[in-house]
Image 1 (tube, rainbow, N blue to C red):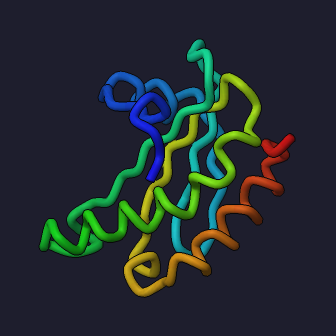
Image 2: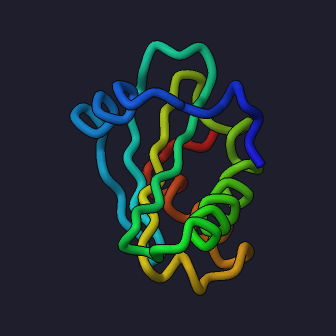
Length: 113
């Protein structure tokens, strides 16, 4: 799991990142990348009810995405803000598959140092 200080909790953060950010797509999730005023890298995870109506399943998907992103957070540029948008395939994907996809998409976005 990500440390609490690395999470982006406010709705206005999501809206700003979605407006100003660049979107990258993978098979299990979409990634919106923006560079904000935050002093360290931050991330947020959105799992809609389209994925599953049960909150337990949605929370499980959110935890898998968070676990997949956490090894790369220290390697991100300092003011990077990420929003992960889960897709249906993320529900069936393993943590290892999501970690590999996360690394691929972050390299494609040239965010890793």
